[in-house]
Structures are given as C-alpha cells and as structure tokens.
Length: 518
Image (cartoon, rainbow, N blue to C red; front, side, top):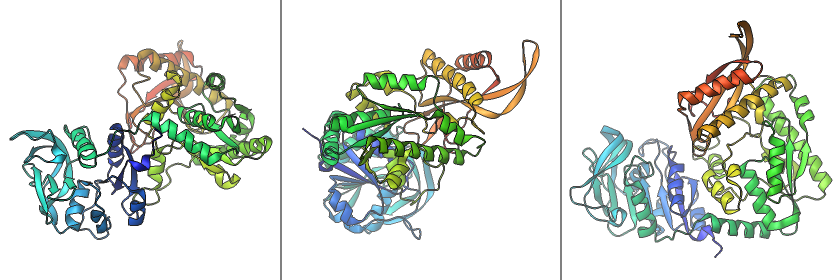
C-alpha cells in the first residue's frame, strides 16, 4: 500500500506554545501523520486538508486579552474530533459560552489530577481515587464550563483539569500530555488518536519511502534535476530518494568549498560511491577562500559562501544542460518556523544553503523530506540501507568551518581547527558519547593567551568545545560530559594541535545562545 498522509491526518493549530512541536512528535511516534499550521489558517483550508482530528495547542496568551489568538468558531461544527490543550481548552470554553478567568493560584510544574469518571479520553486510566502526575503551565483557569460540557478530571486547585462534551467528540485538558513529565500523556494521546479519531497507525518510514518515490517520479517525470550534496544525512537521503525515482536524470553535485572537516571530501565521495550515487565533484576551495579573505563579520561570511555556492551551481547547471529541478533536504522544523503563528521571524542567521537558488535560477524545488523530523529522516536512511556511521553523523553547517572560526578564515586557522575538530569526533566516539549527543565540535576563538609549554612561554590560540543535546536543533542543552572525557579532549588538543595552548568548554544552552557560534 502506498500511503497518502492526507487520508489519515491530524491537524495541530499552533497558538505559540513552546511544546507544539512536541505534540507533533508524540503523534508521529504513534505512527499517525500530523501537520502543524498557524492558528489563523482559513476554515476553507482546514476543510481542504480534511483532518481526521484537530489539536488546539497551548500558548502564552489569555483568551480575554485584546488581540488574543483565536479560531473560527465554525471549526467546532465540522464534526471532527477536537482536543484542546491548556490554552486550547480555555479557548474552546471561551468560544462555546463558558467563562475563563485569571486564576488566584497559578499552576506551573507538576500537579496531581484525579480522573473523576471514565471517558474515551481516559480509557484504561480511570480508577476510583487514583491520582496521576501531570505537568501544568497556566495562569488562567476555567470558572464555568461551556454548555454541554462536563468535567472529567480535577486537581486540588483546578476543578476543571479536563473536560468533554456530552454528545460531541470535543475534549480539553488543562495540562500538557505531550511532555514527559505527564505520566499518562502518551495514553491520553493514544486514546484521542485511536479511540476518538479512529485512526490507524500507518505512518511508517517504509510507507513514506514508497509514496515519496512515487510523488517525485510524477512531479519530475523525464526532466533533469540537480541535488546539492553535503555528505550529511539529509542531503544524502534526498539524493537517494530522487535517484530511485528518476535514475540518471539526477545529477548530485558535491562542492568542496575548502571549509570542510579533516579528510571530509575523500570520506564523503567514498561513501556516496558505495551508495551507488554518481556524483559531480567540484573542488572550489581556492575561490571560496579568496572571497573570504579579510572578512570577519559572520553574516558577511554566510552571504559570501551562499552567493559563491549559487555561482558554482549556475556553472554546473549550464555544463549539464537543461535543468528543471533542484532537490533539497529541507526538514519539517524549517517549514514550521517559516509559518509560525507569530508571523515572520526575526533573522537570527542568514540561510547559508542553496535555498536561494530557485529564485535566481528559476528551478522548481523538490523537497521530499519537508514533512519529516530529523529522527524520521534517520529512519528513512536506515530503510534505504545507508550505513549507520553515515546515518548518525552529527549535523554540519553549510558554511562549514567558516562559522566555527571567529574572525577571518585563513588556511592556517582552518588547519588548526580541522585537527582540533578531528580529535573531538574521535574522542566522542571512543568514549561512547558520539551517539548520545546531538552535536559536538570545536570552535577557534579570535584571541590568544599566555601559556607554558616545555618550560617556555607560549602565546597561542584558544579552542572552545561545544557539545549539545537536542532533538531537532530548535532548542538545545549543553552536554554534561564526564570530567575524564573533557580532560582527554583538552590534553590531546593542546598536545597535538600546534598553535593551541588553551581549551574551554561552552556551557550555554539554546536559547539564549545558538548551537553554532556564528
């Protein structure tokens, strides 16, 4: 069976909660397809999507605030099961005739709920007198339920901790079932998906691969497509899917911009060949470094690198002949951020990949991974037979080492950083930490410090280490590496990398910091 996600889809309306993506991930984990859209998506589009269930996310607003995000009340007349979470529950109450007020006692953190009666949402959970730990995060509470609703769970300070309509499939929970702190969260979401929405768990990466190849083949046909390859899992999976769909009409292009890690070009070309991809290799190292000479500003570096990538791809496209499509490894978090309920986001960093190519080169985009989270991409990679070493490679930025060198990029500084970075990767793998963390790398700082080596004074470079835990790089926390691992990293870098006499460890999280330093 070729899976069509539109036939079995849950729609998540985003009101600005920090955990909206987590709702989507929890639903995907149950092998059910879902999409996140901003709260103000037109009703006509919702009808066009034909969701089998709708989730109203949490959010930071109060329903009675002027300009508070809201929805078309007609959503409740669609006959589609609805689950309101936190703000979503309060908004449901507010729109349908109930009363929401500022709570005298706010609830932030763990709370104990008692399920008051059996219901489809709490199937298998109701036990008289039993309580469950849940995670609350709200300053408002429901004072009066909307007509037709009844309370099905409460806490000591929240009499309406969960509600259900007596005749319609509309439910609400004041707590957050998507977070791990809610011990029955997965059970609640499963009940909503399978008992209330009557969905089937058919969103698998095997079915995705089948549908993606079929769709690419239908869209591209017998026309030509190029694909930008970096050697990372996203672009490699994209190239494999497109290759399976259109065969020799795909030309994967791997550009060596001179900003790669130690032995990166040889390694990437080697495993791409093993995967059966015939790659167009372009060594553009000299031209990239020439363009970056004397440039210190990180935004300028990113823009120069992006512009030069465009130039290289234009030249390669002309050499290949008529090209109609560009394949890219865009992931779902990128799509979500671009349609945030808050509207256009402030620019944190310029996009450095070839995302600007279509506008300038008039190529149509092929983005087979735009529905997937990173962990799903890795599952697809395994489904396609990619080796685990490649599947679990840490993310590497498009501008490469240029944004891990603070200040001007030179051959000397690149050589220092390559050696330090190679040690970081080697030690993380040797210690068993490589697969435990999202990303680990070295950064070369634009300062020198005094040191003592061999009884002589040194005045050399400083390397910072950055190791973080994350799920999709939207947020990240610094990794608490054991001291013995940090000690080995420091000793090896200082002893083996000429020109370095000090190593620091970055213990800042995202936000407020970003994962990369530039």
